Length: 111
Length: 111
Image (cartoon, rainbow over all chains, first blue to last red; front, side, top):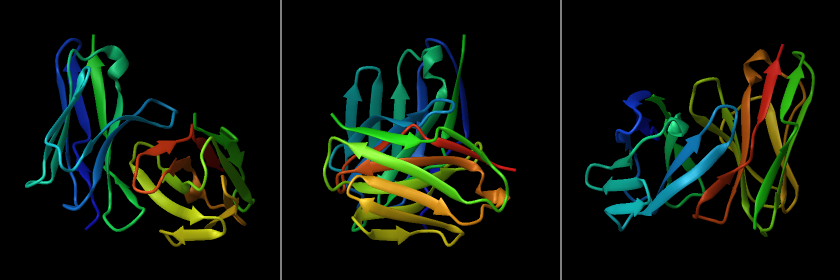
């Protein structure tokens, strides 16, 4: 099917690391993405990874890709209250122009 | 740089009334354009996408329609709104198979 799965909620303490997980569907996806959505706003691109990479680091963000298990994760180091938001993973279905989004993970950072 | 605009930002409409939401993109040519709907606390549902002027692909049968009268303009319409049409409508653009960028969204409440 075309369901990209994410856990619904994650709660962490300020300063800890957050790990948000995603299981995607298309093993041929070229790009995989992480977006952040703050309340009442559109989706903001955080980072993306090419399918031929296993890891990508961008400041506090680390993306890990396990193609065998079709598993994508986003690690946020030193999580801050401003990181509280909904995080979506997304993939492009190969051979199409369609982006498939996960259900979103609501991250709550406790002070 | 590229920007994407949506209006109105918020809309309250009675059941049975028509709808027109507009999305425009600046700073790019021949983008792929997308309409998504996000129900409260839920993920994104792809409604329509377009790869060129006058070309529309519909993903979900419903009482909504889309049109692309100009290269960088995408319009979402309905002749008669239903209560179930309430939600947060997001427009997005991409260069084919590359990163997708989102507008600020329109919040629609049908009463």
